[in-house]
Length: 551
Image (tube, rainbow, N blue to C red; front, top):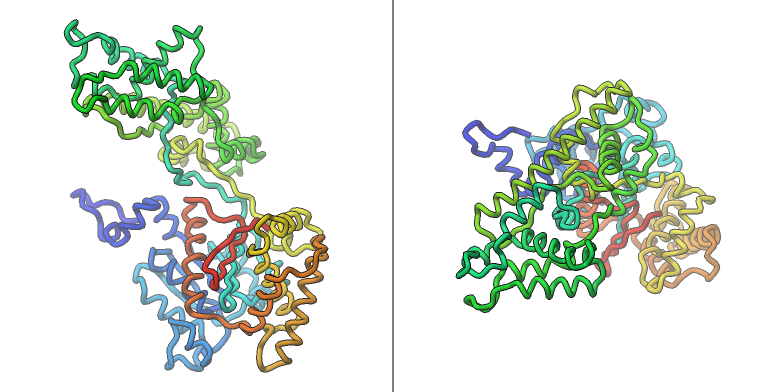
């Protein structure tokens, strides 16, 4: 990512990518620019996905395909035209895709996944490959899926008629910037000395009338609500044997206590800062707690067992855990502040208190990080980035760790987790309309293609009715394997017929929508921001809806 010019004006690249930088920032953009995507299959959907990755500025892409452009391609693939007939599909698609963004380096290889895995496996060797992510377009025989390296994030896409599916597999995926609704953590039940001192100082004459030397109405109406709550919490503790308001009824009484302190002989009959304070009682008056995503991270064995090969995410996580263990379970403070009614100088003073505490906590975590890295003689112990540690601390209670089930496990007949996921979906109250039926039908399509080397419904072969019967037989066997004994659901049969009718063909409108869905999830994985699906999403173009499953 190009830095900001010395004049302070944004660079040309920042101007170009301004809107997306507001979503994922320079960190996300840098990761995009380091990505090299390998597209296997220059299908309509594959090209639509690549379009949506090239426009925001991935670093490189390579189109891998061994087919020639046919008439059937022209009706669905926007990136191929009449002049391309008979030419290598990989070459022509890569050329036109490359014109979308001059910042992106594109290339092609006239080859197939099967040939690469058999004859040039080094291209996909995780230790030497140039590819950071693999994008596979159906059809791909199932045995080839099993031979893919599990260390490289892989996205496998079906697009048949009105139906699309995306299956993601990646090594354990960790996310710091999950983009929650708010990072605010006011710590009203756990104030540190400097915050409490500021609160008591700024509210010492809060209850004194102006005529007796107290605050003016203007001053009283501009005390930040955080300081109001801290002041009244101290008053509450004095009358409740040091206890804080915890239950709903206690918080309701506390709200009344706060409202009693509001001046009503002012324009409008109320003070906005007091209204903000009362509104914050139910949400902000709470004991500090770890959210589930952060609990999973801090309890993960990778966090517990640090070695010289441990990724920096887990080292910082371990440091955060150690920090919390030595600070009564409190995570590093985020330092984020909400807007509130206050005078500028009063708000800035409060903001500085929170920022100083956040910087102090992050510095403590940094010391622990460096201690761990020195202890295990980590090769990057002198390269750890302070900004990364500060970012981690800011988002410490919103971390996520996703473990993806391998494609081999999904297709294993004995994987109990997969069976439970399917049976749960088939047993839900809304199972009749669930897109789990679309998944089952697509799985039957996958098995049919693997066995026959072609899609069901191809008019050049047997009658569609015969092929539907075979698809239905595969569905029956699969349902039996997962332990479902109530016959083939009606929706499953309807979707199977649609898949056979599609004959392995794509629709451009569906490919276009699928291109957005798939690219969106890929960008989440590449940038390590926001939370991607785990691990399957189905799109039904007839009803225009999606559903996700962990299969």
